[in-house]
Amino acid sequence: MGSENQRPELWDLYNARSFKGENIRVFPISNWTEFDVWQYIERENLELPSIYFAHQRQIVRRQGGMLPVTDVTPARPGDIIENVRVRFRTVGDISCTAPVESDADTVAKIIAETATTTITERGATRLDDQTSEASMEQRKKEGYF
Amino acid sequence: MSAIENIAEVEAQDNGLLRFLTCGSVDDGKSTLIGRLLFDTKTILADTLHAIERTSKKRGMEAIDLSLLTDGLQAEREQGITIDVAYRYFTTGTRKYIIADAPGHEQYTRNMVTAASTADLAIILIDARKGVLTQTRRHSYLTHLVNIPHVVVAINKMDLVDYSQDIFDRIRSDYTAFAAGLGIEDVRFIPMSALNGDMIVDRGERLDWYQGPTLIELLEAATTSHVAQEESFRFPVQYVCRPQDSANPELHDYRGFMGRVESGVIAIGDAVTVLPAGRETRVKDIQVMGQSLPSAFAEQSVALLLEDEIDISRGDMIVRTGELPNVTKQIDAMLCWLSELPLDPRRKYLIRHTTRDSKAVLAGIAFRMDINTMAHRAAEKLAMNDIARVSFKLAQPIFADSYANNRGTGAFIVIDESSNNTVGAGMII
Figure (cartoon, rainbow over the protein chains, first blue to last red):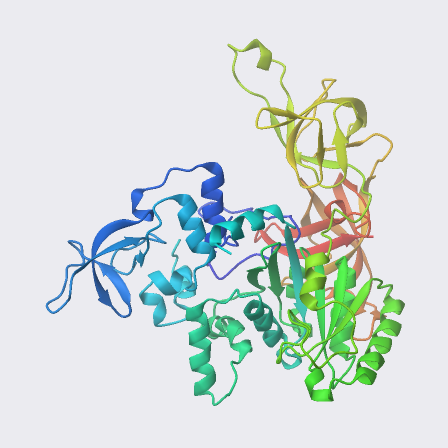
């Protein structure tokens, strides 16, 4: 079925029946906030890639955000390369995922920072989302997981 | 207070999750009310706020237009992305909230029933200038049909009627008279101005004559579904756990009946009856992840071990002996039809009730409900958004309570096997 063909979810009676060749997409934690996710990580003592924690990284500033300098996203002529202490609040395609400035190098510190943050995760880290409020929905429609 | 201390407080006072439904149209200030809740609970972060500030200015407004916070949804609708119910999330530090927002028009009845099915509380918006309208009756009937435990009537736009207590009192008595006729009890009334933020999170200064709680105080204090009433123990079996490990003789006879406690409470040693077999036994152990628990209560997912060996499979139900549900192959129910294809009396459908599926055929339509006038109409078939009293004949027995007594064992969905879609929502009478 098309992704726009969402079945109504009544009570706790989930209908996950499907025909051969069909897929069902489920978002079990779609109502979790960034804060919820970090509290869960702390409670379950989960291991995480180091990229989520504060580290030194070369970046350039573009469109009001920071872009990491990498092989696939090299600095352009005229860019000022800075060495900044950052962490990634979300990890995705490096060409459109920006880190944030942060000293939080433990889960506890990230939770403290998340509790007092004033910018949404998408606003801070997704360069493409600044063009359209609905661009995440558009990506989902195209099959983005 | 530092952020760390803040978090300790969050964990110390956890009043759980409250799901609520907002009923009304944009004209009643519903978007503004939701925006105001998000704004005054500091849920909106700076970048979102800047975005709506810019748009408000562009549209020539002096203050921030809080209804723009729900306009993201509008943008999605314009792009043709179907969203039947929009969910918004906020937290106060002591409680988490999920707002289910369904369009209020008659043609969206199915969306409202869907949103209402998981709600603990409904906010029914009334425009103070207009009072109780047809749509107010419709929304109240639907919240009552789906048996939402708490109803708050928000008499909004008090700023446009000079914050008049007389107008508030008149609307309250109109509503109370009408609600009594439907059997609706436990209704709370709040005068408010979502636009100015009076009686939502802050009390404001213009409604001194009102001594009751603000909206957020009511939300913070509302009990969630299972706390309020004495319920019978109902345990629909999801899965039978039989570990395959021939090297471990302890596991040889292990039979764990896994599922979620739908209602009530059970303890080790309690007498239970297994349906449909009707066999009686006792609870030998209650386990979660290999740990033994003395008892289990509603919404907990556990494995039950029984003293006697009884053949049990998915779809069976374990209940407390002496508190049996109705074991039946014929049900009378209120049904909301969800599908664009009308209910076809000649076809077989699948009914899913707890963890049990049964083939079913319509036995009759007693009446269709006119949800604007509350009149009963004769009906041969049902179209999308219709609500009717019907009866079904089932191929397999189900173990049912009336929906009014037990949401978990009184609700069912109807599935069309030719499309696998959910086409109906039923509430057993």
